[in-house]
Image 1 (cartoon, rainbow, N blue to C red):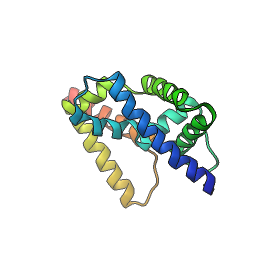
Image 2 (cartoon, one colour; image 1 turned 45 degrees about the vertical axis):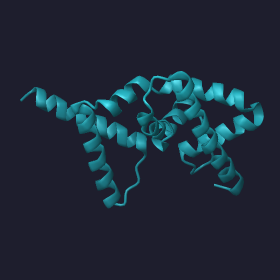
Image 3 (cartoon, helix red, strand yellow; image 1 turned 180 degrees about the horizontal axis):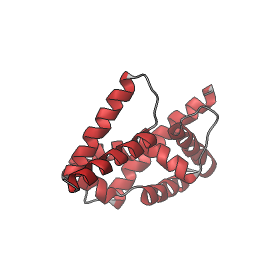
Image 4 (cartoon, rainbow, N blue to C red; image 1 turned 90 degrees about the vertical axis):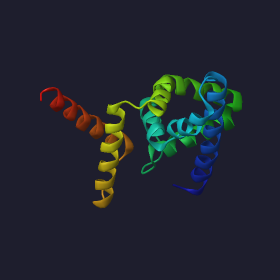
Length: 158
């Protein structure tokens, strides 16, 4: 990534965080403060951003991570259209791609399946990192869902 794109990505990162915080403050006032940090982390994670970028057809330069491409697009939108337009655009993306109520539920009252998913995901990450392999968050999510589904189906047939 060239120097200018790095600067745009850093700017987009900050704008994204500001818009995510404003979104929770304005649209989800009933979410307890103790949940905000974990929820913000999920909203702006590279995994979430990569999923949004792919779904929205946002592509960067060759070799650039999808999450970085989205952050560059955020900065470019800000410079072209201003903060209010950027805020509206990002809030629409949050509403389209995130289920805040479900994320809050998972944080406050994780189901046995949520806990199992977290454990399987952690195990996969550990194995992959030990093997020196490179895998994206979305690929990891797909593998995790498949494993959890197989475990669930196996438990139902026992």
